[in-house]
Image (cartoon, rainbow, N blue to C red; front, side):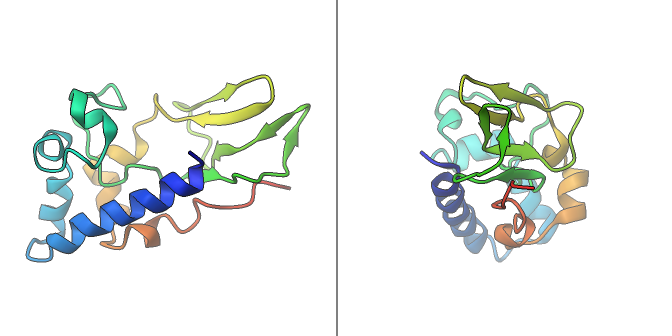
Length: 143
């Protein structure tokens, strides 16, 4: 699955949930996306929910910003780093992120970074329109 196809499918799932929560305040919507609640009420939102497994090793995990507004991807990247193709990166170069470097490709590894999963961060960037928050995510990575 390409980044783009995952991103588009996820945006639709996110919108369907938020559209059902119009009766809730913004704070209540954010609280709804708490990992423990999502596992119970939205088991199809994330494949890891079926295993009650978190994508990040942290006690408190909010899934509203599953996918980070600082993540950048380009499935057809023309950006080369030495002999490899860079497909994704972190726009803020988070100290807790890393890169997976394979034989031919480089991908951002966000598993160690918690930036978008705190309620404080989510409130700062909140919109009920997930795509509005993620507007810069699909981008060109070439110089």
